[in-house]
Amino acid sequence: MNPPDVTPWPPPGLSVPVRRALAEEGILTPEQLASHTERQLLALHGLGPAALEPLRGILSQAGLTFAEETP
Image (cartoon, rainbow, N blue to C red; front, side, top):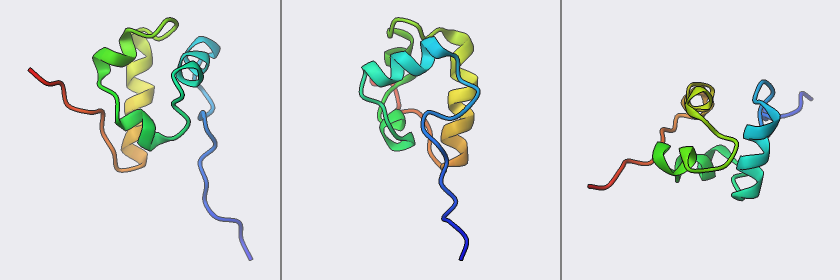
């Protein structure tokens, strides 16, 4: 029997500062990541604009997107 297809969290390829920022914010799953807006994530220490593209890819693989900004 094959093990379930589980993506490790945080996914490989993210920098240590990004991993640390996500962990400190309590973001432990793609679903938790999707509950945040890009602006909220950019406000985290250690997470800059270059981190958004890999995070978008992670969400896309899970069929998710970042939360929408509210006006």
